[in-house]
Image 1 (cartoon, rainbow, N blue to C red):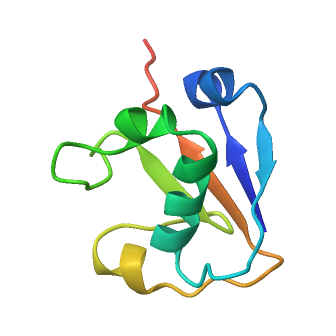
Image 2: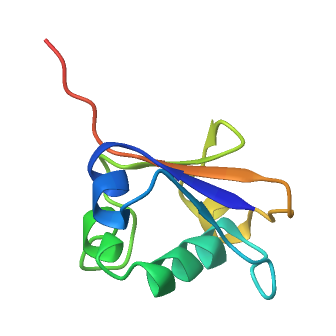
Image 3: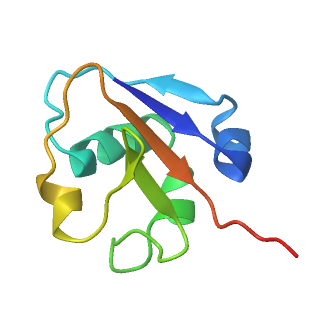
Length: 91
């Protein structure tokens, strides 16, 4: 399973893709915790003080946004692709 990181998340991590071993990861939330174990500085960019994903940050699993209850319950499999997308600005 791999994480794709974009913009400032990739800069902080030093790479755009990070492989996560599926030893004990079964949910998106668990995979995110595993990512934070590898790159602790990402936590404050992705999570708020209440340990919830910032409203302006998107977490995707195979291209679908994961929010709310789904975040802690959606089971992931070894071939899944997760992504963290920062806020987009435009004009």
